[in-house]
Length: 131
Image (tube, rainbow, N blue to C red):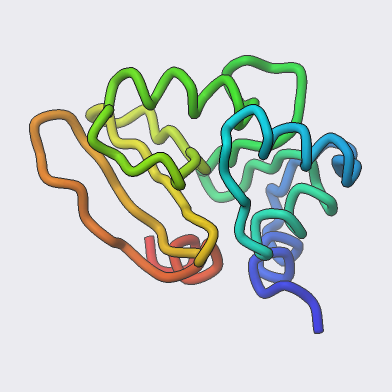
C-alpha cells in the first residue's frame, strides 16, 4: 500500500519535487541528527527527496540549506532548544516563526516563538490535508 502522504502529494497540480534520496543518504541524515525518521517521512524522501505543493515546502535531502532536513533541523534546534531531540523539521512555514516538526512515531508538532509547542496531527498526510 502506498504511503498516504505520497498519494496526496501526487494529486497536487502544483507539485514540484527533486530526485528521490537513496537509503544511504537518508541513513546519513538520521545519523547526523541522531534521530530515526518516521516510516512515512523516509518513504517520502525515497520518492521525492524534497517536495513543494499547495503553498508548503517540505524539507528533505537536497543541496539547498533552506530545505535540507539536517541543516534546517540543526538551526531550528538552536531557536527552539525545548523541542525533544527525537524531532526533526519537516517544514518552516515562514509565517510568525512557525516550525513544523515530526518524530519517529509520526507525531506532528508545531512550535512558535514565545508559545507552548502543540501537537497538530499524527502523520504528515493528516497535517497536510487539515491545514
